[in-house]
Length: 382
Image (cartoon, rainbow, N blue to C red; front, side, top):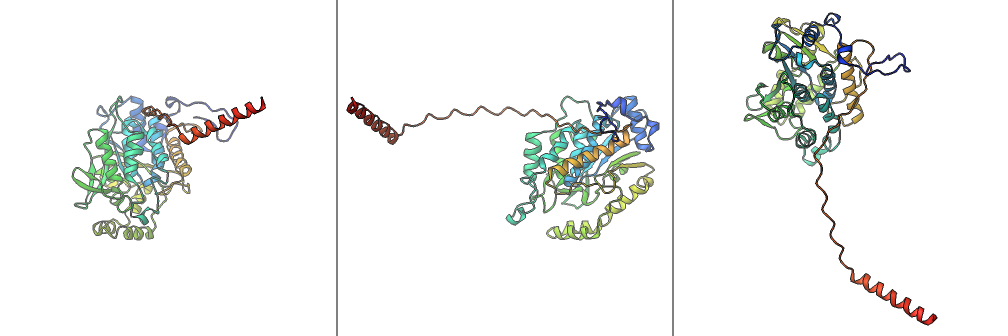
């Protein structure tokens, strides 16, 4: 939607991507310039002519991934996802990455709204010996059964890759070669697995896996190491955010039952702040001779927490993300009319007919007795 924020009485005018997209020369970001040039030329994955390898890297962070899900929705609406060659995601950002490559970002953002319920996330469950996050319910019911992601009927999109940590070797894995949505969703679950908080570790290709954010919380380094020349990073935090030192200590205590992961955390201590600092300073791709830019929400924005169950806060986070992306690629004063996705589920089976009621002998005797009394009263009156 397009309107003037300074004039609440101004009419809303439905926007079309062709009318609202900035021209390549109107953006300062060299990465977005290439993305817009490709979009204008109708360039598609697997048929490039510019010699670039352009990647999208999507940060997660549990329910805070709703922010980058909103950014992905705007990219999808603007027709810009096809301008990327590969899309990398970590943690919940892997779900956003998968959805974007399948052309279903607008559907997947509703997964966050569905997950913002206490039957999926409940902090008190460890007192009952159960995980805080019910990953079985989230992936098998909320995502797979109710709103499955499918690439059927769509044009081939960018290559999807998810980051996870192997609990067998304690190494980072870039999960690629995902042949269908089922494999891709298993890779998402592996990338988002929360040790201790999410129950048993999922297996992917024979290895037990955990959240790739333990090694690479902002997944642009893997893109660079695999040959990217341009990377656009979608952040679920503001550009100036840095992880407090006490949070590293808290995570180490939470993983005390996994000595190997505690060692991983110690070796990766401070990695988030270094990556965020390099992005903010514009030097993230320097060592690889590449260009890396980021899209972030404004400093001080009220974002969802990692385990947030406030549906309103989660939806607001998605809108903030979409607004940040709109400001980066669209012209004019933009207002977003968040349109829910209508998803048709399989019809429920017809209910079985109710059994015929059994005769009640006591009630029958009462009715017969009442009839006898009425008859005798009528005879006496006559």
